[in-house]
Length: 394
Image (cartoon, rainbow, N blue to C red):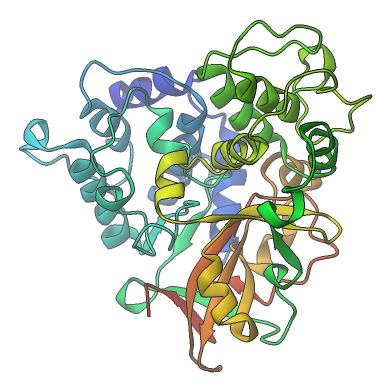
């Protein structure tokens, strides 16, 4: 086991987790899963629940480091060996990356009754993370291209019968975020790049983990930004830089701009640049999202939100749309520091039927937010409840 831990540490750029941090993570995961929290004896920190929570936390970190492996199978074999109960298939070298990763995810689900929580839930033909559908034949160049889709924080998603996800529906008739949202193209189509560079800075409620993820993805594209210098002919990339960086190159997504950073520069396809930024934030592939017809949507509520939606599905079922927080209400125990670091994750769902057993299909995903105090989700993912379930396409 020591060898495998070293492998994950090498990928993530960090060593083992300190005992107190591990203990805190275990308790957070137990609360989110609705289980009874008991004091873990110091000598038992390598028990299965501790190892699982530590594994999931480290798995999230891999989405922010563009490390490369010699063989594609190493992106799974060297990582998932740390997952309690995981058995590496004997023919792993002969399997393709999507197949090998999907086998690992299914082992996690069968062994522990939880899955990995990802931003592509329900958007790519499957409720749960299924790399055979999500990655397809995409050529993987680094480990972050696989794991950046995982929701920050390492929270597992509990599973109910038939691979569904249990929901606590607290307010079935609450007004969903999508009701106040507008297509980006309708909102900004007639605006200049200067106006858009200023307006999108109002999206200032993104957590630190998202800022790190987007900045890392931008750096990987090889386009550094300077507020006073444009040397690349790719002005769309430079415009993307104005959305991600403050003047002087300081990372600070969504911070108020001191002036119109794009003033004096050419007009660009700001829709494409903004779409690119949102896919970076969610760890999704830009081209695949466009191929799937996901629409860029902006909600002007306080705080403002931006995300990707199956807009046709939402418009046809607007009266049955529900905003769902992907954490249990028990997550209210999280510290302000954790909330600022990871944010809160919201998705849009289409509700079929009423409680006590509503079936909900995912129709969109918002970029995580730090502050949800003025947003009232209609439902939460909660292992202890069964008022409804998230399910595959209905």
